[in-house]
Every structure is written in C-alpha cells, then in structure tokens.
View 1 (cartoon, rainbow, N blue to C red):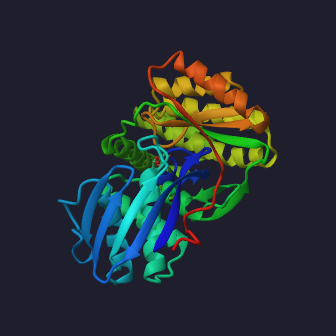
View 2: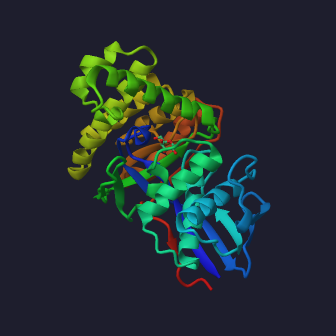
View 3: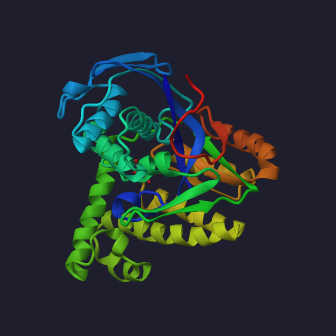
Length: 372
Ligand code: GLA
C-alpha cells in the first residue's frame, strides 16, 4: 500500500498573473488530499472517492486522448496518467485507489490541482519515473488544459508540488525561477470560505485569458515584438500605453501590470513583516480584481470587509474568483477573537454558511511514510 498526500493552496498575492508570464506567491495549506493505492498487475485503475462516494474504472492502456473524455473527478486522473505516459513513453502501473479530501470543493483552494499532484507523485514513486517536481507540475497543468478544458497557469500545480513548510513560494512563471519566502512566524493564515460556491465556468476564466492575449497583441503593435506577454509591460509603460487599448482589455491589462508590481513589493513587505504595507498591497489587489478584472462578487467583497473589521492585517479574494474563498493574514495572538468576530460580521450580511480554516503553510505533495 502506498499513500500520497497533496495539499491545496491559497495565494498570498499575484492573481491572474500566471498565464501572463507573471509572478505568484502561493502557500500550500494544511487542507490536503490523500490517495491510498494498491498496485495491480494490469493497467486498470479502480478509483474510489470516499469524499464524493463515487467510483470509476480507468484503463491506462486505453486512455482517450480527445472527447469524449471521462466525466467526473477521474477526468483529472486520466489527464495526469495520459501526460505522464506521453512524456515517458511508458504505460503506468494500474492501481486500486481510495481518495479522501479535506479540501472543500468549489472554494477555490485547488482541489483539482491537489488531485493531479497526488496521482503524479503516486506514479512517479510506483513506476520509478524520477521526474523533477517542476516537470510534474507542468504535466499536471497540461492535464488540466487538455482534460478539464481550463487554460490555467502553473500556480496551483506548482504550489501543491513545490512549496515548503513555513514558506510561501515566489514563482516567476516565465523563467520558473523560484524562491521559498519565510512567512513571519507570528502571522496566521486564515482561509475564509464565503460558502458561495465558485461559479467559475471554464469560459469565464478562458475569456479573461483571451482578453489578456488580445491586449498583448495590441501592445505588440505599439511596442514591438519584445512584448511577449503582459509581464513585459512595466507600470510606467502601462501608464503611457494602456489608455490606447479598447475596453475591457485596458482594465484587464491594468490589473495584470499592477498585480505583478504588487507581488514584488509584497516580497519586501513580507521580509520586513511590514503589516501596513502588506495590508495596503492586499487591499489594492482585491480592489483591482473587483473593479478591473471583474472576478469578485458581493460575498467575496463582504468577506474581505469582515476580515478587516475583525482585525486582519490584510485580506483579499484568492484563486480564480467568482465565489470561493478569501485569504486573511492575522497576528497569531488575535486569532481566536478574529475567528469569532469575522464570522459574526459576515453572517449578518450574507446568506451563505461561511467556514474559516486557520491553516499552516505545509510542504508540497509527498509519499506518506509509515503507511503499509
Ligand atoms: C486558477 C488557476 C491558476 C490561476 C488562478 C488565478 O486557480 O488554476 O492558474 O490563474 O486561477 O490567479
């Protein structure tokens, strides 16, 4: 029996920047997915989700490469297996596997990336593939593109596979340069789930991405081929050239350009545990996602306000948006009080059941020891 754990993630800052070659700063959180797997002698996988009470069978020798793709969560597993097989030229080992997850579904905490990461690490260990974590993350991202139809960036898969305990992961999604950035030990991370299910459709997300690509093409017309993605636009260039773009491309691009600059400023603020600056940057990020990128909603806005009213250092929506969760940073000494006050404040203003999770920053996915 092999057991693999893979964490969900929250992003401290750097939202909707990863598919623009930009910067992100996610944290792997202590809400995890676990897979218990028994290898088989053939290429069949019987996969049961305890959390969903759903069971699927997948034949690794016959994974469909185009529609109709399997329905349900097994789609992600099929995607990871297909990408690993394509990359290595091997047929993977079949497994009887049981999944259980502490990750709330639809809360924007990347349960799908955790599922992908868990199976990637599982097969890497079972079949002795010896692929590095960045390669695994990129294969999982491709699985998401091809099997879930979401043209996501690399952030979620990288966070679930590469983070280190006690640290956020600064990732340059163009060069893949990484830095593990310590989180001030006196600060707690709270995931504040609005209870409003994330209604992100693939089309909302893919539309934002397409608008960024349109903005890039228009800026290339003015600034030349050196502009490969919105990452290449500095705030100074943004002030000069973004007004030339049509709406909504101008506002979408303004968010991305501003957000990349905020991630860099956030690194310095985190290093100095500068609460005023962290707060200002998180609030600016949220406002930009709400007004320019238009991916927030009334409940996310209310939750950010609830967290601030309850004494958070800073708070903002996290993940793709359109519902889901906020991240708040809180002085540890104030955590208990915060949880009570934020919940009371939010409940008085929104009709959904909120949930608050005080999370540790944990290591990326790993094979669990001592399970046998
Ligand atoms: C989703 C995607 C990520 C990223 C975020 C927004 O979580 O999977 O790649 O784009 O949205 O920052």
